Image 1 (cartoon, helix red, strand yellow):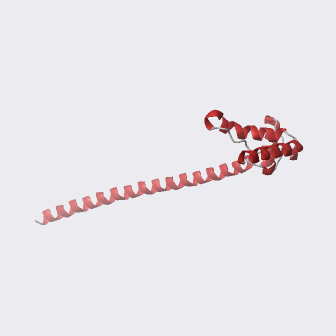
Image 2 (cartoon, helix red, strand yellow):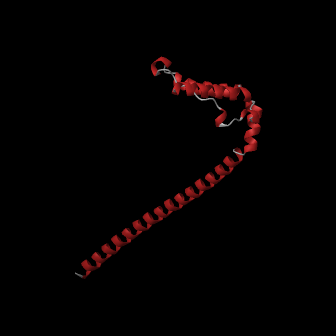
Length: 140
């Protein structure tokens, strides 16, 4: 009986040692995974910081203006091209929606803006006055 108890104790101790060894290996593997995840997070944060720095450099207004002038032939808008909303001519109302066609609602504002940009200030005032008079006639 003593041998059986000793043998049973040895088997239980070996099973406990094996269980503890496997648990220790699992914990070690999980810690390595956790450290790898932390390293990945730090790498990603560093990459994000570097990209934000590069983005702020690329979006500097002076640099964009220089690139626009060099590659696109763009220049700053002269003050004469900037108009107030009151200076724009009013859009004429179409007689009937079916007669005006499907493109009329899109084309009328574009034409009004094109006309306002192309006309000098005195012509814009006369166009605005004429469109105001036409509107007054249509109301009566």
